[in-house]
Image (cartoon, rainbow, N blue to C red; front, side, top):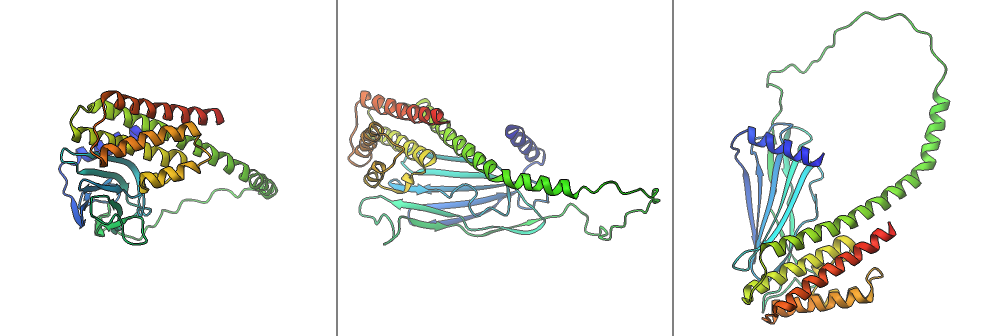
Length: 324
């Protein structure tokens, strides 16, 4: 159903022909963010595409906004996040939303918060007392048009029909309604608990599917050779897959921590076995050597890192499926 809905939205956008976009650009230090909205003059019922594009200099770690953050006044029809590193080492991240406005008139895309940690040599990673720098985008206003003509009458008067014959009231239904409500009230806590447990399991399994797909895509794009820049980009993306999976699967806020801080936190997690902790420690330590010590590992070490990540993904997925 989601694929059909996305295809329908794309078809509507194609049929409407070329559209104009509203765009705002914000910049703070090594990070530039651009917010664009199209079309610039939609009417109620039109899908609206919102895109946040962020570019960060090499050595800067990006923390993109959480899904749907500050967009609760819109219905979110579709969401596509992307992140990559270009040939010059710049991190390119984007979040594309397809939105459905709830009413006509002036609506606003509120400022979106992009956080980043400046890990470049000689730079302050974050403001004193904070975990990261913050870049707020500009507020962007959209005028949503009405489908009614400007001169349409607002006084609606339905036609009056003839009254039917008078009917005799049936038996009172309120005792049955009260009994049904009492039954639903008693069963509601159990139903909610079961739904929350099911949703948590689905999210965790989805985290495995996302991480596996990202790893397959990374290996399909190119295997790093002996070039240091290629090796650096490969291990940056590999460690990013690990950190995003740990956040989605075990609720560990690993993307905002240094490797040393994360390894200390990992020891306290009841969900990670000692073998898994040792495996992740070796993998992330090797990635740091590549990124910060200009170390170029051999091909066998690259294969070992990829194999270790696959073993970790499969092991933690197997544990969850056994619990389910």
